[in-house]
Amino acid sequence: MNFRTSLSLLFLLFAGGLFSQTADNDLVFTSGIKDLDKAFYQDKEEGLYYIDFDAVSVIVKSIVILDSQGTEKFKVEGTEVPINEIFEIDPKTLGLSPGRYTLQVNSYTDSWQKTITVQ
Image (tube, rainbow, N blue to C red; front, side):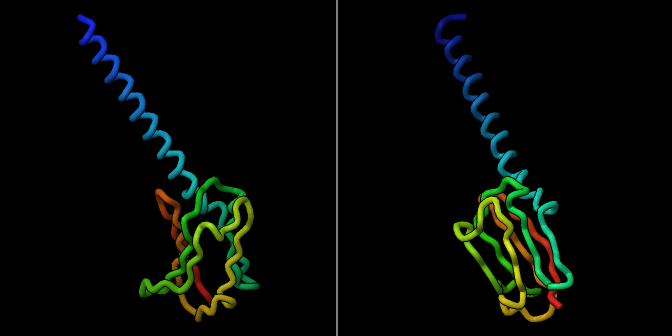
């Protein structure tokens, strides 16, 4: 092998290593939002919902509540979501009528949804 061929081969190996590292990093960011199932709680007596962001590693872009037609009823931007704290959702305070809604937490790479029922 000559020098030019060796250099080209070395470059391709290095570039492939960078690509695989980027793919691994993406997996780290997307896996945190799937853990929200374990961080979601409901207080049935009070009709409240909680998301424990201290229990998961996710950077929140927004939290949205949609009605059954997909109309946005509530939205909070990620900059307003507490980091490493419990986020409380009180449907009565938000003015939600009785019915089924979709709670959606969006990160910059993925989203998580949960159906909630307001009594």
